[in-house]
Image 1: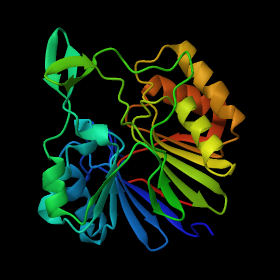
Image 2 (image 1 turned 90 degrees about the horizontal axis):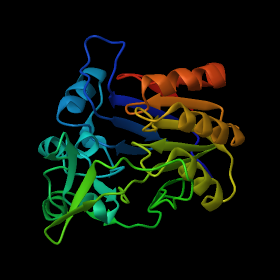
Image 3 (image 1 turned 180 degrees about the vertical axis):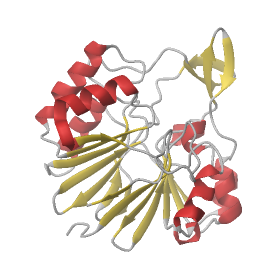
Length: 278
């Protein structure tokens, strides 16, 4: 069995072609897979909720919320979502709740979100945490933690987390993606791809029944990557023969340009309000 109808709507993204919708440095997607409704990330604040209302979505219909990782631009809207509805089950890596920081110009700034695990457990239908793949149903699963083996993909050195009162380098081990099984193949949905795009795709190919990867949707965190990394990423993505590549959020203009040059109409930038149908 697989999903027969899949629609992904960008509730919030860095850009938009619809002036009536809000934008921000953040990401949130409303995923309709047959009768299952999944919210993938919640952006930085409440803007995704206002956009959802303008787009005609009822967020109380959400069955599941998946957090790609614990940074504010992906989980910052959780508190606003709880004010609208708590009738969902939340899925995340346990380290998503670890206090996170970003060091810029010598200043340590908070980079996580404000809702605790205890508050979510009290106000929702449950919190499911795990470093292994978490099955939402028979056709939708998180990747779980992704093994990192490439020598050209790494997390930036300005990310930190607080462990036992000490600031240590954060390799963002809580980064996960969503895998949806469709008739055309697997659709991989990423938040920021801090694990590395190539690592993620190879992980999916190795751990999800040998199914082909039909589409890649989301942020690839190549905004500050050198051209050499972008080129190596494109080379590796090409080997998977992916037919649709929707580039969002933290991918970066240079990478979007290189991907569209390399893949033609198969690759295109996302924007707030965009709807993808499979």
